Amino acid sequence: MLQQILEQKRDTILKRWIDQTFNTYKPEMVRFLRKETNQFANPVGHTIVNCLEKLYDSLLKGIGVNEYQELEELIKVRAVQDFSPSNSLSFLFDLKKIVREELADDGQLEKLIGELCVFEEKIDTLLALAFDLYTQSRDKIHELRLREIKARTQGIFENPGKSKKQ
Image 1 (cartoon, one colour):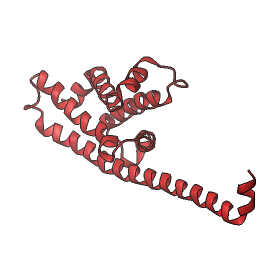
Image 2 (tube, rainbow, N blue to C red):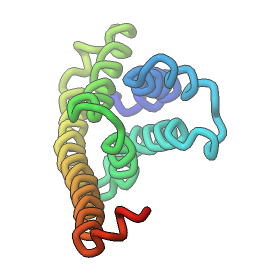
Image 3 (cartoon, helix red, strand yellow):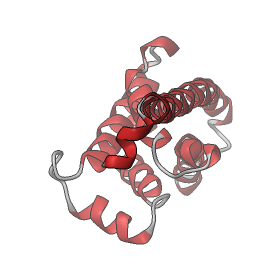
Image 4 (cartoon, rainbow, N blue to C red):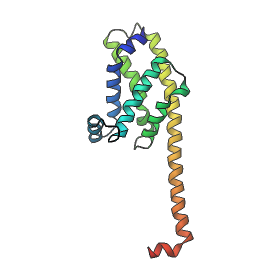
């Protein structure tokens, strides 16, 4: 029964989920994300919309945890931005809240609480995976920055006279 309701409310839930995810950005960026729909002019907005749609559909299908490629793509985008870890991953908490609110609005929440708990466990599993992906992405970013710093300083020490002439 929950599956059917979530499929029927797909567009409403997705719109709210996308809006809520956009709202994690600064107001001027939110306006841009909502206004610009061209994927090349707005790759962040396109990635968010595309990945959230696929994530939602994957959650409904119940695919395995290792098959959530869109989660990794979205986490990589959010990891390079100036977000705290909790803000980067907040979109998964938001989905739980949105689904509960939609069910409550229809008077279905109490009747479907058992099925909802199972659905929320799937989201919690994704959240744990998302945290691992976020950590890996941030580690890679720090590693790249460290390599860049090492390359710069190594060049200075190898050619000290060259840096003065430039």
